[in-house]
Image 1 (cartoon, rainbow, N blue to C red):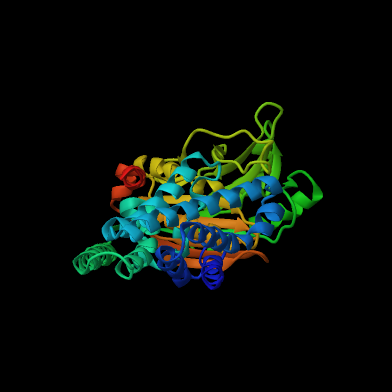
Image 2: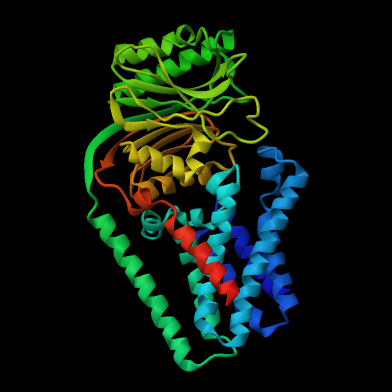
Length: 457
């Protein structure tokens, strides 16, 4: 009971909407140390109970904010409990048998395999990962440039699995020393890589980015209504303010307005004129109404005064965005492939960011909409995506956070947007790609293969 409560409390701290970084490292430790000292059913039950305690703090977020059906939320919780219990059971089998090297290896690779396979099939992409708990620790997140977030997950589980192995009741002293030395070598190599990557950062030209949000409750406002005209006026003033500070590119939040497909260019004229007059590019989120192709889009209003180009959101929130059609194409700023456009949840999918990086993007511009309570977490997912593929990210959300981060996970500027905000920053562009942007999910697939081999063994 004590171990269940302790690990459950640590999981709740380390895997929530505003996680405590150190708690994510410590949470598996009590479970794995206890596992070889109790019957298998007790170890499994404690692991499942601890994970459930940790996840219950997210129940209201799933069912109220994201509007996940209660039955589906319960199934997700149950699936997580089964997965964590299976990982502990696998580690226990090797701990009891005295096979300490495999016991130390099993939890990190099995946990990565679980997260990775869920991420491949889930409509929420890589949203479900404990790795984001380290988003404010750039020395740790640099690992993502090699392996994606999966390497960060493995690193989080490694100390607990090693501690459980070297303190296990069975096993030889020589194997304990070998496990410790191997783990120390891995950590030292990764720490050296992170330090070298940050010190020898290859940076190119700088871009001055502005982010603006106006306090707005409820859904998008019809652009041709009195409320829409008032909101448009406020955003035009924000654009003028940020352009006056020197911003060359200005990003506004997701689905601020609803606009008719055939009249959208005319309806966005106030912003388009401001962009042309001030010689800035403006990216604004719009719900495009259409009988055949309703969509959540980002309209790019160029400094040259050309008709708006459109990016259509690829990854839609199940249920909440059922009325929209997903997009398929990438969109860059006119005449500048260094600056790519996507929308909010698209940043939960590493493959889309890699595609932009391979296409030449060095800075991603992301209108977004948070649910207040998830503002920190969702903004940090964007930061980690930038580290993975070596791109800077400028993201501004309604009811959440506005952040500009560089390709190394350093947050250049941040603001709370629940009451509105207008911030700007100069962000350097990375001159090189990353191993992960070139090779993709090689580490995730390796962990799946290793987990299968450990199960067979």
